[in-house]
Length: 117
Image (tube, rainbow, N blue to C red; front, side, top):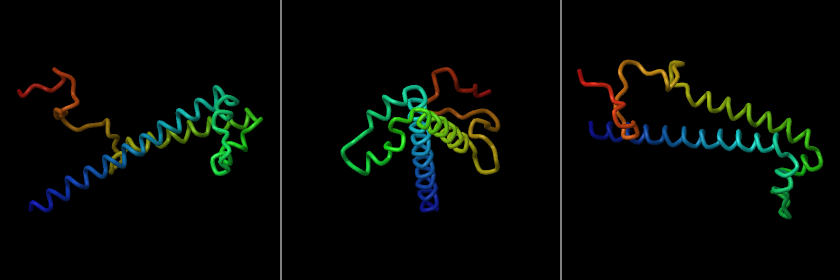
């Protein structure tokens, strides 16, 4: 029984870690996309590099701000799509759609817990 509980805790921690990693990827995609849309020349120039592997990632956008803007819009859309997927729970419910009263968490603001009545 204790092994099952420990396994559940481990599975929960892994699931949260994966969601956090996915969220970080979504934030990066949205932010990088926004910079690419708003400041394409400056953003590409910043990432030019003497290292061929690094420079190869931005070389297709050098001197082509319209191409970088289009790619930026694609990054924003992909980041938002990823974030939307991360909100879903098994069964198609959103993480934000809870059943019944919410349970207190250590991150809840003071006074936000439901009363015990």
